[in-house]
Structures are given as structure tokens and as C-alpha cells.
Length: 411
Image (cartoon, rainbow, N blue to C red; front, side, top):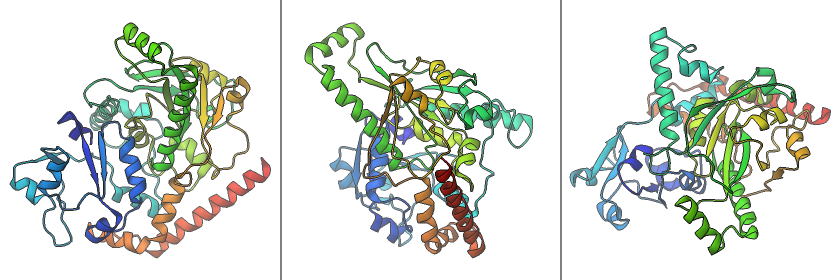
């Protein structure tokens, strides 16, 4: 989508229905409504079109004012084995871009079913510098440089061409990041220069694992933006005089909130959730958060508990607000948001339509539809995982659930 956006001034994204995908490809993991939510949240998408036809026809493309159709360099066929883009290709209105390397739905499903942990990243900064990873030093440096470039690419604005999100990394000890250690010091180091907050904008902080970045995370972030906009309406931010003053002083109008998202390390998430969570490593999760239009800055390796030492060390100072969502699936032994509450800056987002859509829910969907997903994997040339692997996953999930219950009792 980023490469497609760079090709033009607007990007219209067609989203196939659940029924069409099932007929031509196999079962979906996310519903149409959930997938539309994901596209609408992508900063590079101008418009989403639900229930787009699986075989793209010229009249449909022209109806939305599009001249070119952009797709990855993989072959996409319908249920009859014919090219889904044969009509636009024949008309010379098809452009090919390279598929995003290193991750796919097939990879993620495999991690869920096989319970692997090989995707974990212990230190993102060391991987980016080439110090950690597989292969020779030269190979690690090449991989690290490519990953660093992808972070910069994903940190662009809605055009995909100009600076957008600022990217930072929190450096502290593992124990400080996993637990509530108010005295633990650390530093926030800049990775990518982005657009800084403008005068009058409220600095808002959110944090999480954002694993399998889905409609649950997206709706939470959208509700945070909505809450800040409601507050701004009450304070007169959207009055015509206030708008004219901002334009006169800064040459542009801008939103009332600047949202900073902290992303937890793989080891921190696994410490609390167990099994082989997170399913996506911190690099992959970071890219997902960076492309979200509700985020203006990202902090990699954020601590599980936003302590006073951490909050004051954030690049733009102690935030005006810290938001948390309805995540009740992970009972803790302590309140990680005690400091924001003491500072009077803590806010909660209530229940919403996608509140139960999280990594655990998505894994359960895969397990329940294992046979269909295995059939899809086999069609792609992937080895089926078998009953033993699935039973192992189910057992580990049960053990993790029991641990969560014990934590809830001991809290």
C-alpha cells in the first residue's frame, strides 16, 4: 500500500468480501468489517471500498476515478486458475510492486500453530546495527540496514514521500521494562526524525504489545483520537478564530492531539503472556503501528509500566494524558498505570465493537478452523502442522490461562 500510494496522489483500496475470498482463496482470519477498519486506519489509504470484486474489471476501476491498478509481484488467480488482473493488464493499466519481504499471513499462521519462538528479537537496536542476528557480520549488517530503511519508509506521512512519524527507542534494563521499577533510569534515543508536535497540541501517550495489529488496537487508537477531539471542541479549538490564528502563525491547521505509542519488547510480552506470544516480533509490530494514521510518534522497547522516570524522559516531556483500553485478558500482579493515575493524567477508553479482537482471539480462530487453514497451507506448498502440534498449542494456551487466573487471585 505504501508503494502504491507513492505512485499517485490518492489510493483507493478495494477489499474483497469474506465469501469471495473463501471461494477463490480460502478462509479469512479477519471479517470484512475488521479488514475495512484496518484499511481505513492506514495513513496511505485515501478511500476503502468494501466488497470489491475478486476479478478486477475496467469499468469498476474507472468508476472510482482510478487509472492504474497496483498489486504485488505474486500471481493471484481466481477459482478457475485465471489471472485476477487479466483485464487491466490487457489495457496496460496494471503496475507491479515488490511484495513486503519477511512476513506473510502464511508465516504468521505457521507461528501460531507450531508455537515457534525463532521470530523473537532480543534487542532491536543490536539487530539494526548488525550485532545480533543470523549469518556473517556482513550479512547481519545488510539485513539491519534494510530493516532500518523500512522503519524510515513506514515513518512517512500520508503521501509516503515526506517525513511523518518520529521514531525513538527506550534503552533500559530488561527487569526495568518488565516490571514496575520507578527508580530505573533509561534514555530515549532518536531513530528517525519526524514531524514534532506544534504549539497547543496535547501530547498523548498510549502503549501496548499491538500484537497481530488488528481492529481491536485500531478502534482503541481511534477512540483516543476521538476523545481528544471532543475535549478540543469543548475548549474552542475548532472555533473559526482559533483556526485562523493557527494558520496565520504556522502556515497550516493541525489536529489538537499528538499521539505517542510505546511498543513493548518481545521478552516483556512473553514474560506476561507466555506460550510464544508475541506472534509478531517488535520490528513487525512497530511497522504496523507506524502505518496507522492515529499515531504521530513511536517509541520502541517501551517499559510495561510507564514510570515517572520514563514519562519525564519521553522526547516531548511528560504527556498531558495517558490512555489505556479495555484489555482484561491479561490479569497482572500490580497496576502498571499507578504513576499516570497519581499524576492525574490517566484516562480509560471504554468498551467498543472490536474490544475482544486481540492476538489471543485471532489465535483461537486459527485453531478452530485448523483443517481449512492447513488445506490453504498445503495449496501454498507449506507442510501441514498436524494434530500433535495443535494439541501442544492448546495445552500451552490452557497453561497460560491458568497462570493468568492465579495472577488475578494474587493481585
